[in-house]
Length: 321
Image (cartoon, rainbow, N blue to C red):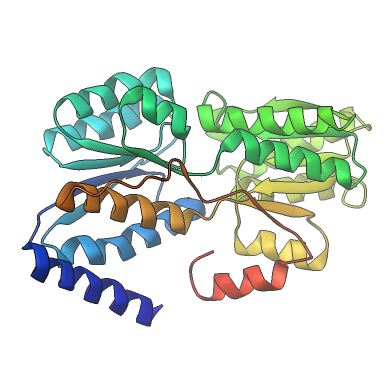
C-alpha cells in the first residue's frame, strides 16, 4: 500500500509538471462514522485525496450523523456542497425522490457529479452525472438469491433496516427475484430505520420471524453490521444449522463466521475501489477534461464464501476489503 500511495503521488506530480497546478474542489457524501462499510469508503477517499491534493485541489468528506432522518439529511449535505461552491460532487443516490432535485440543482450550478455506490448508470444519465461507480444493486441481489438456490434453500427473507432507500430496496428485490426464478420463494422483512445499528432490535426481529415461520431456510441482510445482529437472532432461534445466513458487504466478524461455517456467504461490492475510482475519475475530469468511455464502472458483485475466504482475508489484512 505504501508503494501504491507513492505511485499515486508521483503520477499526480508528473501531471502537475505537464499541465500546471489544478484546483479541483470535491465534496464526497457518505454514511455514518460508526458504519464499518463507510469507513472503507473513507479509506478510498483518503487515498484518492493524495492525487487531488498533489494537484493543488482538496476533498471534503461530508458524513451523515444518523440515519433517523435519512433523505432530508442527505439533501442537506448536497446543499452544503453547493454552498461551498465545490467543483465536483461524489454522491450516492440513495433516495431519488428526495435527492434528484438537489443533484440537478448542483449540476445546474456547474458542479460535475459522479454517482457512487447507489443510483446506477441509467440514473446517472437521467440526472446528467458523468458516470456511476459501484455495484448494480439489483444484479447483486439476484446473485445472492441464486446462491441460496444453489445451496438448496427454498424460502428466504431479506432483512431491510433502511426501507425506502432505493439501493437497498433494489438489493432485496434482486434477492427475491433470484430465488423465485430458481423455484424458491422469499419476502422482504422491513424494519424501522432506527433499528439500523441496534443489534438487539434486529436480532429480536429476526428471531421472532424465524420462530413464526419454520419454513424459512435463508436469511440475507443488507449490511455486514446487520449480519452480526442476524447471526445472534438465528442462533437464539436455534436455526444456525438450517437457516443459511448471507449478507451484502464484509466485516471481520462476518468473514470469521464464513471461515468457521456459521455464515454462508457475503456479497462484496468493493467499497474501497468505489470511492478511490470515483474521486480520482472526477478530479481528472475537472482538472484535465478526461472522459472515461466505460460506463458504468462496476466494482461488484463478488460472492465471498469458503471457496475464496483466505484470499479475501489477505485483502482485509492490507486494509482494502
